[in-house]
Image (cartoon, helix red, strand yellow):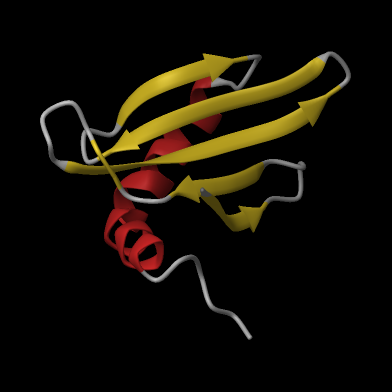
Length: 91
């Protein structure tokens, strides 16, 4: 299950996953960034709590990737909270 987080003006959509157990039995989730392009998609996925990039495809710049990593690092406690709640409640 994935939950929507935000859509940026360049079309990049950000979603985060439900909480699952990683290979060591610890709680984990991923945050995925994806932007539609003429040829397909630019995509990058970070896993929490390691902040490791687990998937990348396309042409995000180093500056964009650094920004996304900052979003993931600063938002980590909120992503876990919202995942436990079944997504962000806005209405």
